[in-house]
Length: 241
Image (cartoon, rainbow, N blue to C red):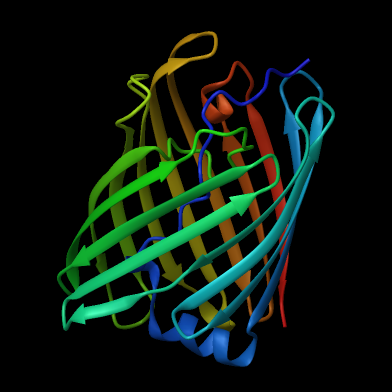
């Protein structure tokens, strides 16, 4: 049986550096995004998740539900927005709640343009929560990035536990590149280290997302998901409308 998640956490907001003109255009035309995910774990168990997200400008709200045989079921709701404090200074706060009494929040700063620094901080009430962003979230975020005029972007950032004394760190190298006919490819290379449920974790992961106008598909390999003893393979499909 898969052990329960030992890193209760908020689903952190998408980092502000990924916001771009083409995404704003997508949101204006298709304000809703429905994502259905299938999760397969290395012990043979499975999980399912559904998420409905709404966007207007730089503001998002979402509803979601996750279930598997070990953890059970949990519903969630969340909200984030982006505030321009100055021409090259963005603040992005986020709030989330879930059944089982979970509450959490975070805030990220993006400083600079088109090259920028990222500083973030997150806190939860440590109530049971199935962490669907797969990073420590009672944590600090530090990083840097660049975004180009044609939807290109590159980020390197680290999310590190600063509360539970686990030494858990997730490094992400995230790159987005537009393709022909309105398509877009996003790659997220992950390096994770720290104390897990079954001892020290040293692992690499990768997620790839292919966007088409109106829909997308994502395949991810996440070793030692949530620093548990299990590896996860996740396949997600989404529609924009």
